[in-house]
Length: 428
Image (cartoon, rainbow, N blue to C red; front, side, top):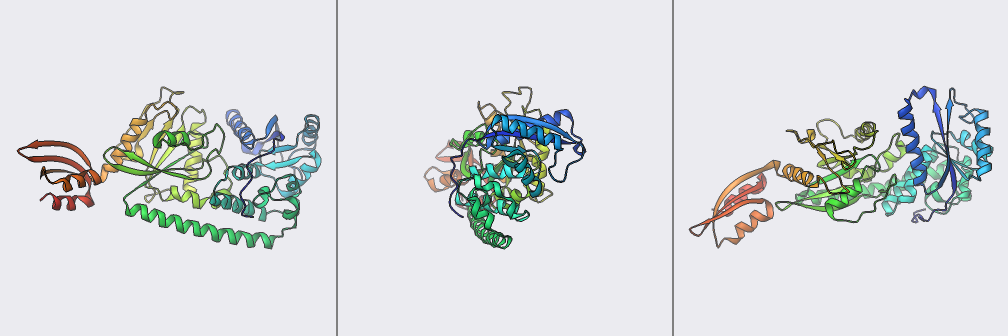
């Protein structure tokens, strides 16, 4: 069950069904935005989305969620278009899922299942595969195992996300819980390794800056722009799954570790938040968070709220939380947006375009100033032959100016307080 997932997905014809429950009380604009996001999720699963239909649901049916007439209408479209997968933008009970599959003669996937399948197709590292498996097992354990007949249509892989249907049907709850304990143990080991790595970075005075944001906000594009890397970028939801760390060299010999993380969506399944805690610990343990927002998206305010709620769910709120800087991305599509620097770094925002490079210098300057906020400015007078002291200035601080008079080098340097005492001793 620990084998890597085959990333070659068969292209299925799909349709999305959007039950608009009256109890949700969504505005027309909010509803349209939700539908669009779910359709993009369906497309991100590498299926060919043929139809997208909506139905008002006044009272959800216990057996099928939708009314009998709605179920029959969809069945006709499924048969006429030879649809093989139906994505339902709502959480379905095992009974509802099984009944709809029988009525439509097609695989039925609810919102949580769709996100899990996308994550399964994106996982690349052994850790990512384990996290997907844990999420899928936690999702399955609350269901009737015998209801997973649709898994016979899936390819081999990890957990219920890709394993042969016959094997999954035979699994009972005890076996699933045993496997959950095993995966949790492996992930605990991963957390321990990550904690050791973070401790090592702190000893080397290398702070971590984490990029977070709504999915498809442009985090990976910004990551590549800053670090000159080639992290996978695509106009798809959840294009980034496995975390990536790169060094970012700033002016004045300042270095930070930049972390690119998975994006968030509305109603992110709790199973995923728990399962991916090991990955998101790079965010939890970060010294600074850059909240990347697609400022050109009409739903940017709602997306901001989703990210903030998710961070709060991870425990990132209150006085102990790292400062958060808003990075307003895609200003090339919203030129009226401008930067704003507050006295407290958490009050700051930077407007930029990761695609064109506009505003990138403003962000790197802000990061440099943040790095130097705990520094002291020293004026030293050292002999020209004292290369050791000058090298120390460049290694641990930022030399602001140098001036030579009578074989004496006058140096103004910005340096962390913990190095200032040592530097003072060297320059005597």
